[in-house]
Length: 278
Image 1: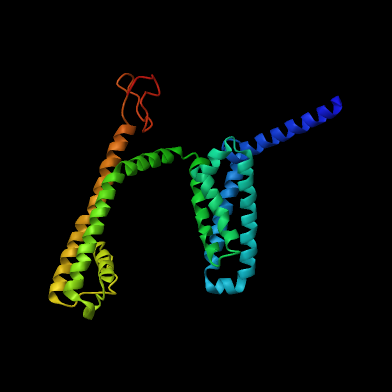
Image 2: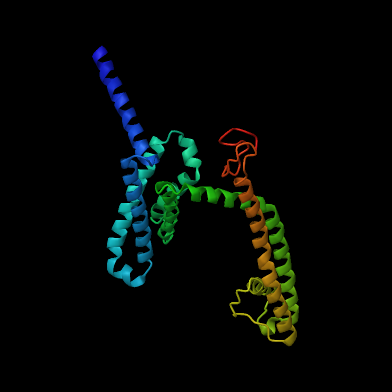
């Protein structure tokens, strides 16, 4: 009985050690095994995305379609195994499943399985390219992660202003589209207000597809005013985000009044060197 308990205990601790080892390889980035795993994973992601892009080319699909699909399912099987291992070895499983990388890892394998039921969904495999964001951790480019957090903070701070701006723009294009419908009318291609609003969006954003164009002098004059207004409007969200980005950068580089330490985290309240309140 004691001998049986000894074997079962050894098996339990052996599995626990295996789980820890796999977790260190999959989630860590400092050991040789972890670095090799990350590099192989990044190459696999690149190749799988390249395969999907090649499959969308008709001539290549006709000649090598079966080979491409076989390779695609091979990569899908490998990524599925990797995802299951991540779930198994994660220290906080629920946190990983709900995290950005956890959701991206799941979305990276779902399109292949959905393609069994819905034609064309396999092309969503290009979502796997988001997994390349791990390259910042693999190559120790954490300063870029810090810069990304500053940009994210600036965008969050700009959210209310940009929302108000977008509501104003939507209201404006509805008014412009309605006026152009009255000016030009169905005879000149502005067959209804939704089509006219579409023209207003295309013109206000200075895209100018040219599929619908005003024919009357009044309509052309009005469209010229809309184009000029478009240039002014484009500058508004840029200015909003730039101002918030400048503010976020100043907060992230604020110096401690006691020891002079700079380059604190954007949400830091205390100096990381001496602990003084910033």
